[in-house]
Length: 407
Image (cartoon, rainbow, N blue to C red; front, side):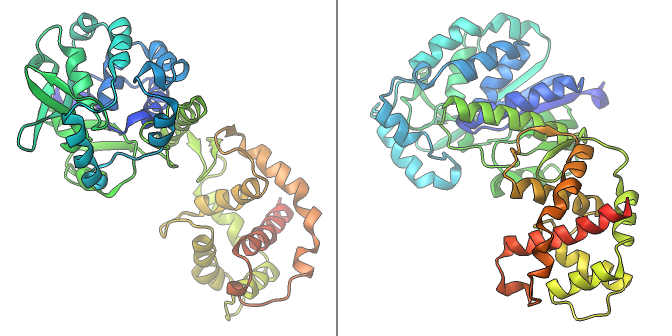
């Protein structure tokens, strides 16, 4: 039994949580099932709806209800707070807010409770025979972590504890049995250990931040088989419930999850996985670059070596990868895709869509000669002195022309 148990961990992060909806839809489309879910803050709320198997209601809550359905707050205050990031890094501002909240000057989130009472079915969640855990903290002379499993929560009190897990310090705090509760992010924003303690060793984590504390937490669990889905761009502030922001994050979650499972290719963009463009294919394309192209690249990159294959492989391509912003250990395939992606970027093509890579190559090849004069206008000088975008444009054009001739 132990080996086949697959768990899902949902990190906290306020309204960034829309990203988890998109990622979960992708996991569902990939046919991945979970026997247990744990989450902190918004991750716990999302997890409860996932266990209820009601992603439609969740999406509706995310997309169709604006901030007024979650908190009693005027527009000016909302606009002031929506882009703030509540992270443990800002702990001092947060403690100040906690003290305000203790005097109960916080934002009233009773609308959120009403919404959950209408849409969340506690008995269904208890009967689904899956593990569920959440993290909250109680505030008594300091912060006391409260990790809880569903079976630890008294019947009829699930919504209380979900709200306790999501009580950001700017909200009126939640008291349960005369204890004051706070957002679980102050204890464990990524409750992997709640699943580990139940014997799970195959875990998917859907992150909302890409921060140091989270990475450190992941490193503590090196012995588990963990797959992380990490946002490929910043998801916005912790309270931003504007529809366009929510829509963007749901889309991004879906695309990033598909890419994490190698169903989509690409570095910055998303392409249908295309098996033709594997590492060997891409390596061959680079290996076949002409001596003249290598010479041009050496000149642009200020590499003073003979323009041979060895120089291309040892000097030109590593330097090119670094100029294009690829990580040090990039593959030939990464570089190949990145060269074409630069053309999409130069033309401001929307990143949050799925493209057909063959089409991209065809369109780029068709249009590549319309700026033919680039090379001829280019006096050869060290790369540093020219605008970096212009350099990447010249470098990528030079390579794509050669690729095109290899066809």
